[in-house]
Amino acid sequence: MSTLRQLFLANNAQTTNFPLLLEFVRAEGIYMYDAQGKAYIDLISGIGVSNLGHRHPAVVDAIKDQLDKYMHLMVYGEYVQTPQVRFAEKLVSILPDNLESVYFVNSGAEAAEGALKLAKRFTGRRKIIACHNAYHGSTHGALSVMGNDEFKRGFGPLLPDVSFIRFNDQTDLQHITEQTACVIIETIQGEAGIHPATPAYMQALYARCKQTGTLLILDEIQAGLGRTGKLFAFEHYGIVPDILLLAKALGGGMPVGAFISSNNIMGALKDNPILGHITTFGGHPVCCAAGLAALNVLLDEKLIDQVADKEMLFRSLLVHPAIKAVRGKGLMLAVEFENFELNKKIIDCCIENGIVTDWFLHCSNAMRIAPPLIISHDDIKKSCDIIIKCINQCSQ
Ligand code: PLP
Image 1 (cartoon, protein in one colour):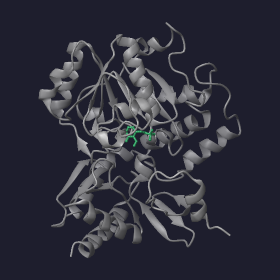
Image 2 (spheres, rainbow, N blue to C red; image 1 turned 60 degrees about the vertical axis):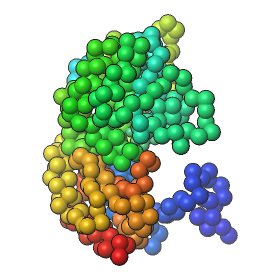
Image 3 (tube, protein in one colour; image 1 turned 180 degrees about the horizontal axis):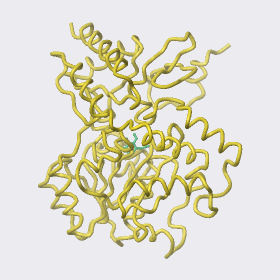
Image 4 (cartoon, helix red, strand yellow; image 1 turned 120 degrees about the horizontal axis):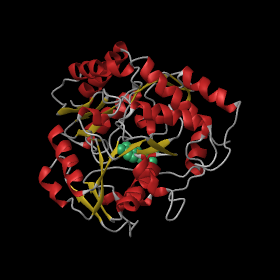
């Protein structure tokens, strides 16, 4: 009889020839458990998703409650579905005034797709600017604004009229003109290996967009919802985007994404022609119920207030001659090593010792530290002890 691993390799489409092949049977809080009962700390939150840890009881209850009422009823935007309405109401109540209209989709890439279309339709322009080393998803439109040619190989032609500027380089902002529909940019670049925008850059970008009538799309799919120590990462910069992208942690472990803008801008999808963006499952009632419960927990338990302190603890413990830098903001950190080989050895050792981490799509010599925000000080110490032990072991 085939093992589960053999079946996975045979029947489930593979995205690399070297999948992690970890097999978990249960997950709770910051821990994931294998069939032998071995516990692993999820130090990457399933790549920025499990901000409240796995299976937060309030989220599980909200899902069960909604399951007992209804699941899918109708494509997005026609019926008045309570979970969608309540979730949008809550999001709008915690966002700046111009971010008042929420379009729910299923994923981060879909949020990026919707936002790019919206910017073109609203401005009547066709040029799009993105950043080198950006990651906004893997569908055709989102791939078109990915700032790494290697991952685009074999998929052309992609969207025309997309050009790239250097992240955090103010001299490149001159490329934004009256012909530019939008700039799409991560507030903190994630897959580039965690690079926060500088305040001066973000403010200059904002000003240039305003000057040229270009819409500013901030992708906070990875950085949003408390991870950086503010509810939204743009709050660190004193600016507000025209369109905000959220996904990943938005559903509390369930799949939901959103692009959020003003009623004026979002109105462009309503007519000329109608149905400017369509999704069957976007804003699935069960996912929206989960997302609302997760957001309430995040706010009620004041988890964001503890993020800066936890970042400091990581930074104070992750000190070693083999560590070249610790970058990032809040619990969105990258630990940089000399090269990929060393990083990979340390990551393998960490996994062996019950700490799950990985590297970044566009940065293979840095290790990702993005645990659930609920991680305790003791578990941070435990994680860092193991990481340092592995660095010692692998860097000899
Ligand atoms: N934008 C950013 C910044 C991301 O990190 C990701 C995923 O890693 C995405 C967009 C795409 O999200 P999804 O995988 O849900 O399509």
